[in-house]
Structure formats: C-alpha cells, structure tokens
Amino acid sequence: MTDALQMFPVRQQLYSAPLADIPAAVRDQLCTAGLEERIRPGQRIAITAGSRGINNIATILKATVECVKSVGGQPFIVPAMGSHGGATAEGQIEVLATFGITEAQMGCPILSSMEVVELGRSERGTPVYLDRNAAGADGIIVINRVKTHTDFKGPYESGLMKMITIGLGKRVQAESIHAYLAWGLQNLIPEVGRAKIRLAPIQMALAILEDGYDQTCEIVGLKAEEIEAREPELLVRAKEYMARLPFDDIDLLIIDEIGKEISGAGMDPNVIGRLRIPGEPEFERPRVERLVVLDLTEETHGNGIGTGLADFTTQKLVDKIDWHVTNTNSVVSGFLLRSMVPVVCPTDQVAIETALFTLRRKSVEEVRAMRIRNTLHLEQLQLSAAFADEARDHPRIEIAGTPAPMRFDDAGNLL
Image (tube, rainbow, N blue to C red; front, side, top):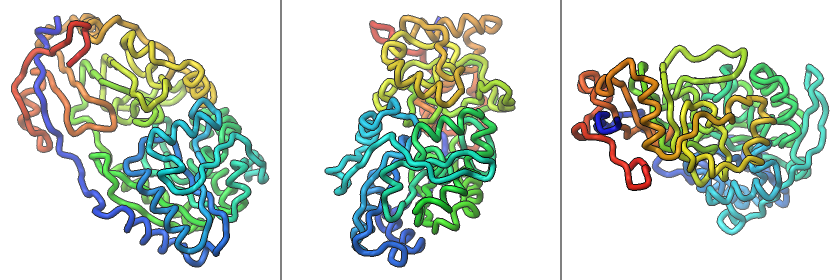
C-alpha cells in the first residue's frame, strides 16, 4: 500500500532573523534591565533553567552567569520546571544536562531541589510557593522563551509568568495550578506570578523569542516590575514568528519524533490542530484526519506525553516510554488524554499502512499526506503527490525533488 503513496520533498520559507551575537545581546539586555543597579557584589543570584528545548539556551545561561560575575554577584542555576524530570531533583539535573547545562559548562553551581517555601497567598487565596534554593537567594533572574502555549490561550501563555509561577514553584505549585486544568493555567498563572514578583526576590528577566527556524531572534531584558505589562506584547510577536504547516486540510500527517524538548505536549497542538482537553474547544485549523507518530527523542528521557494526540504509533516508541516520568507529568497536568496510547503497530510501515487503510474511501494516490520531522522543525517536509498542484502555487514552498515511493529498511523503519 505504501508503494502507491508517492512523496516529494519541499522546503518551506519561514520567518528568519537570527541574532548574530547572542552573548552580546544578553549583556546588553541585562544592562537594560538594571544589572549593575540591582545586583551588588557578594549577592547570591539564582538563574532559572527550564526543561524546554530552547535553542542556544546553554549559551544564554552561560552569558548570564558571566554577566552576574562581572558585577560581583555569585550566580547559581536552579532547575525551574514544575514536575518534569520525574519530579525529582536528580531527574531535573539530568534534563538540564541534556541541553549542555552542567556545572562545568556554566561555571557555577546547579542547586536542584523539589522543596519549596510558601511565600503567602494570591488574591484568590492560592498558596504561592517558591523553590527553596531560589528563596534563599538575594536575587533571581528569570529566563524563558515566550511562545504560544500547548493547552490554552490568553495574554500570558508559555513564557516568563509561567516560569515564575510553575517553574519556580516546582511540583507543588504545578499541582495547585493544574488542579483547575485549562482555567487554572489561564487565570492563575498571571495571578500567582504577580504575587510571586511582589513576594520573591525577582530582580529581572530575559525573554527569548525564536523565529520560524527555531533560531534565537530576540532577547528582551525586563525589570521585574515590567514583566506583567510587557509579556503580552512579546507573545503577540512570538506568534507572528512561529512556523506552521503550509496546508490546512491533511488526510494523513506522519511525525517522525515527539518529545518534551520539542513541545510541552510532545508535539505542538498549535501545529497539528489537536488539543484533546475535555471541555476546551478544538482548533478550527489545520484539520488532520489521521496522525501517526513514529518515535520518541532521546532528549525526552522516556516522557511519552503526546502519544494521546496521535491515532497510531509504533512498538519502538512504546518500548521507550518511562511510565513513571510520563504518568507523573500527565497526572500533575491533569490532561490525561495526552498520555494515552493510540493503536500500536509493530513497525513504521505497518503504522502508516494501517492509517491509510482507515482512509480507504480514497485511493492511496488521492490521499493528502504530509511527513514532518517534528513540530518544531517545519522548514523541510514531504508531501504526497495529491498536494503537487497546490505546492507549485504556494508562495512559501519550494519543491526540492520529484515524487517517489516511501522507503523502509528490512525492519520496517521509515527511511
């Protein structure tokens, strides 16, 4: 059946504006945020590091460490990632090491703990928790990418306020927010974040924006008191820059890999058009009828969140899932459908053939199929022959080859 599915490679032109000198941008923006005025010699400064696959994050963190040292501060890094890494201090250090964030590389200690202190209450009475190591610091610098969230829409999605609220609040704060599902994320992230900015020694922040090629295109330094007012405008820009699929109507979407470093949901719902959160409306576009995921990334450390967004998967993916890590993340978030296992097939080839069988009202030649590496990298993809005419007319698409059958190795793995 897959022999009849002719696929051709294309390149999609995305928004591109990479920063030429990232350490220089970090230094400039930290100065804009008041580095010299707000950090005094001898002060212990906590710098946040999250679990997302942010491009150049190790470079940005190292430059921040060096800037703090340059004014006499004593920097250390705190893992700020809620319940990720299996909700253990050791697991969160392992996640950071995946991104090249180690004590040796950063030139400062990494203090990891799941313990928190309660600072007070938000206006609705929600407890406000802060990582114990960060709470003992003289100052905190918050660093995170600002981007659209995988679970909800609002003026504050995935960014600085979320890092302050959930990342710096560890598992206990994550549980308190996620207990209210999407409503909690939408309403309690800004509320608890606002309280934490007031109660914690947060001094400044660096907001990172990425272009359509996952390149760092902006680094914006903010004083603590500017974060709440400025983040919504940064989110608007980030949404304008993000990559999307070039077509909305897709019969079959094949995704090579999913993982937590790619998206908090394993694969970005904003890209695939699937939310799967009870009570929340689904996306109007894109419209994907059948979705196949083939593998987990190494960097996800067995976290299989996102399998539940697919219709079909492979045995090799399921064999890589660490159920303790996955279930911890799933149960704390409350979005249980995201970690459920779809139809499991023995190989890539069988998974794709099974998906095509469910689309049998069309001939294989008529199926509008698309293959992507993951939802973070959308510059190179494959389209089936049914897309050929539209691809030729698409202003951002360059056809890079001729249609050919999908190829598999002897074990049924897609080449």
